[in-house]
Image (cartoon, rainbow over all chains, first blue to last red; front, side, top):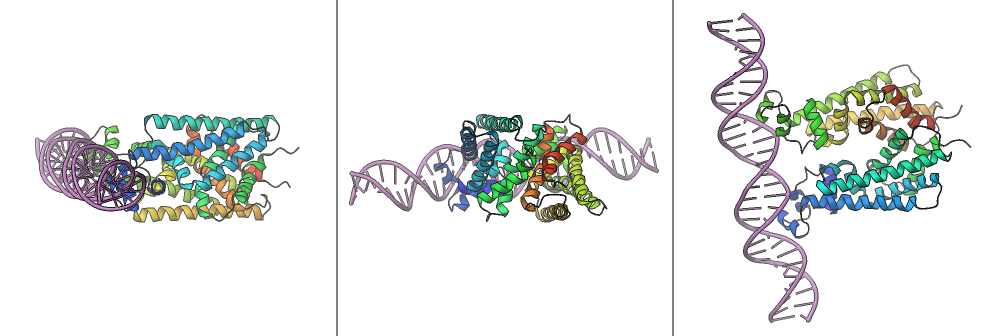
Length: 182
Length: 182
DNA sequence: GTACAAAACTAACGGTTATTAGTTTAAAAT
DNA sequence: ATTTTAAACTAATAACCGTTAGTTTTGTAC
């Protein structure tokens, strides 16, 4: 799975052949089928398992008793942690999910929409409770989310940074500027 | 080229066959070759021509006599304009450039690096001249740039918004929070 | 040492791919 | 009306794809 994830990321799912994967493992393509059911199955496992981690992380944050701003901070922290731990797979969540088929695709999209909705709720709560300036939440959400989603590409070029430092800088860039002076 | 761009965006370059393209045009796959040299050529034309537009836009801004903050504003405006005018092609610049081959790939990467460097210079100048808070410019650049680069996906779901309104909201979300009070 | 299971192998399958060569039709120019 | 040019066509090619079936090797448990 790790080899596949790395290759899918580098070449894309469709451009990666079973031959590519098997040769990295020093076995024949057909031998792969002793371990997996299909190429599509690899993608599904990779994507759905990581999507699940985001959902779980978000659920934990949502049902906590933190204030909205602290929740927002926790979400950033969640993205940073998962990005560092599963860089390749996260990159697939951005670029290769459209090659999922049927049920798995539907399932994935549903999970992502659900996640986005939770994120939006937190932002709205931040505005409602006076933590953030009263700006249109749509572009605000998009801006924060697209930065967090593509973090893997930045992290690749700055692997030496600590997760704590990265979280701090992201908070500075994404959130601190939107704080309401109180 | 428009049909190809739309299909490349929807299904990905590799997953899009010449059959896919030709059938949308109601001709046979082989007939395409009266107009183009290869599938790869389509991608090259699409990507390099739009990359050129970004380079040109950035050059014009760079050599203008505006102050750094105004330049930053102009760059946002450039992204918004090109995103609205060439939504499909811009999406390819994010997701399909890795399927470029040899020279064209090198050329594309070089152009993008060059663009990023110019962007960074503007940001640094903003900090130097006291327009923006003195934060690490790396994450700041990444955050702004990744939002602007993926704007096409947001724009798709909000096509009714005016470019001026979009620019204003982006400025609010991305830059206003980083302004130094003076 | 023998039995069993896991995981490798070879060989082959039908299907799709981008592309070419050669030919015919349609449109435009003279 | 004739010539020229552009753009469609048919047919074929070689390469590669994911996957299956059947077989052999390898490692483990008794």
